[in-house]
Image (cartoon, rainbow, N blue to C red; front, side, top):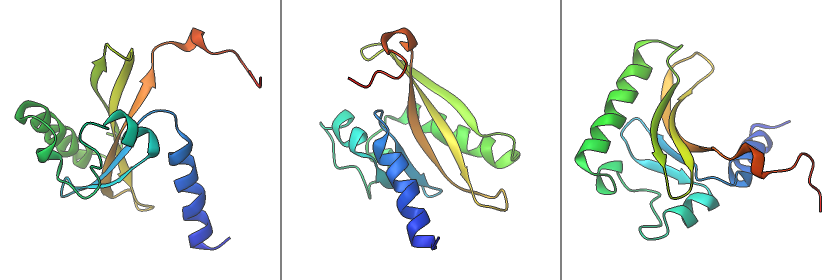
Length: 125
């Protein structure tokens, strides 16, 4: 499999997620938002190419910076709970993106639903 084909697989995974995923580099610039993020952040979308500081308040931006600094401290530091979205009943997390050497190359935000009972196993209808 070529590297391009592999990248297509990874992008396909991110794009198929139902929840918003926003990828950022270490300059705090948004480098990608999946289709769910386009919808979730529709009032300010598109956000790709923008600095996080242009879409976050100072307090939240400070927390993101602290999280990234914590990721830098140890390769085992990879996930931070960010906040709970009461309206959509989901938790938002910030996660480290590391290269094959374990070096931090970026981070991303994604959601985890709090309604596991709302879905049925293998509901194919």
